[in-house]
Amino acid sequence: DTEVTQTPKHLVMGMTNKKSLKCEQHMGHRAMYWYKQKAKKPPELMFVYSYEKLSINESVPSRFSPECPNSSLLNLHLHALQPEDSALYLCASSQPRTSGGKGYNEQFFGPGTRLTVL
Amino acid sequence: AQSVAQPEDQVNVAEGNPLTVKCTYSVSGNPYLFWYVQYPNRGLQFLLKYITGDNLVKGSYGFEAEFNKSQTSFHLKKPSALVSDSALYFCAVRPHNFNKFYFGSGTKLNVKP
Image (cartoon, each protein chain N blue to C red):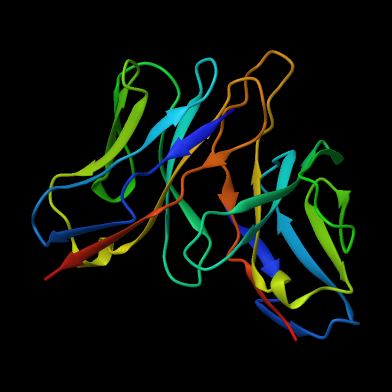
């Protein structure tokens, strides 16, 4: 299985709602990522989990809260979002860098969740 | 600072002609280099990567890329373009000692019949 799945595909929420995005992979990858992508722009890194621990947080506002319950799952909890947070949210996974400096595998991306904040 | 540049926002080519999508980078050390393609409303799909070895790398769907260390470039090429190659292409770089990928701004490839 070389697939990263994301649910839901589309999400519309108000600024006071609480929702969660889910990501799952069964490739045995131990690094998982959340990206935000605006139309026709490159993905912007939000968070990186390596071996289920948060390793990179790109100064993302606290209204976005990531969670990695186990090595296959990654969640992004959303609360009190703003209209400018509307975007395609992409999850990806890869083998992480090992202590020996290896682990250079490519990222596998999910299809994304199209989020609209009203 | 680490950066990846894709100098062309858009590349237009006729079907059957060769195509090149350019990428240059400024990353410390010997980074790992990648190309991804994105179709509308889809995630990114991996095309190819350069880690070490032969400077010409072959990937999916007939694409290849040439690594040039002196020019810090990793241009994507295909000998004969197809209309179905029309999409958004991203170059990405990962430092060898850091688990973060840096993406270029993307190049929209238009292949006309």
